[in-house]
Image 1 (cartoon, rainbow, N blue to C red):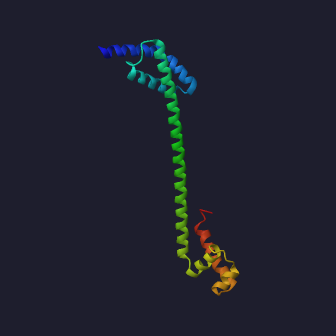
Image 2 (cartoon, rainbow, N blue to C red):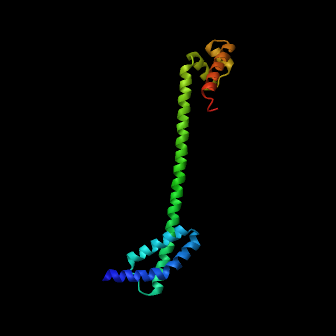
Image 3 (spheres, one colour):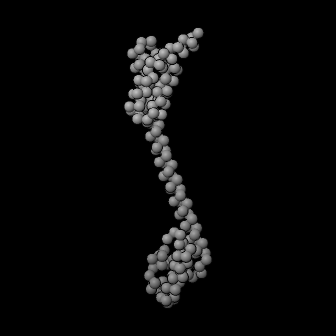
Amino acid sequence: MFLNRKKKRFSKLFNKYYKKLYNYAFKITKEKVISEEVVQDSFIKLWENIEKVKEVDRSIEAYLMITLKNKIIDYYRKTQTQIKHTNLYTLNKETELNIDAQWELCDKIDLIYSKLPEKTVSIFKLSRDKGLTYQEISVHKNISIKTVELHISKALAAFRKELKEYI
């Protein structure tokens, strides 16, 4: 018997206030689906608490309006959180892709070094990693500047050929 009375009361309130709540929600959200969702959530809350709400119409209307406002706020908070997480996911995914690309490039460079003669690698690293001039390398290695140029040219050619997709 109690459930029947609850259903009738709820149905009456739903019919009386749905349009007003929907229009209010639509005015704020400007979206039909969102408006329908927050109004539906408001009526679900009314159903759950209908025994606690006084029979006076102003009390019920105030309860529904406050509930609706809170549901709209909750919706926007949830949306902002989703946007934040989506942006964070996108940023993390981009970072992950960049890191993967860096690892791939490092692996490729290591592979190129492994294919070059040890002396060429040594001379090239003195030039690129240590920043030594050709003259300084020739003195350090006790070889001619032309030999330094030859080894660096050989290394650069190998890097250009193998890394053309990165250049």
